[in-house]
Image (cartoon, rainbow, N blue to C red):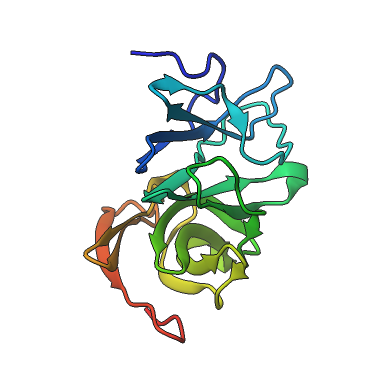
Length: 210
């Protein structure tokens, strides 16, 4: 057991991935001024690096948003997705690295107008596919995904399914299995009935069809 950071956000999920160079851990940090931006540490030469800020969003919030980052890796490539609502402007952002986190691309902001966050991400050949929950009319939520590359967005967002916008809908999770993406999510409308878990295969083509 090793201490990586002695002051972090209490409830946000911690993300971890393994590259050819070593371990990479991302999480929501917490400053004495309650700035809760994403930070990361790496395992380099059998030692953990000092925590570094991934991007200076400047999100000041006096409480945990329960909305951690997600990271995916292959070889020396990394992609990290996270949610922020700095300056009361909710957004989902993505950065890429091709050198095990030595450097990162400029953040790419997803085409989401009212994101709730709850992100996940998987690498694909030319970039990554990011999943999140969006708040939609009627007070419900919608699971969506969008392909993205280090150069920017690759097509528009694609809806997967409707669900609750509340905490009961949980966090969609995606895996890349033998070159195909599979997503699992909770369908919950908080009307007293049972929640259900769904699984879908995502098919990417030139039109970003599901």
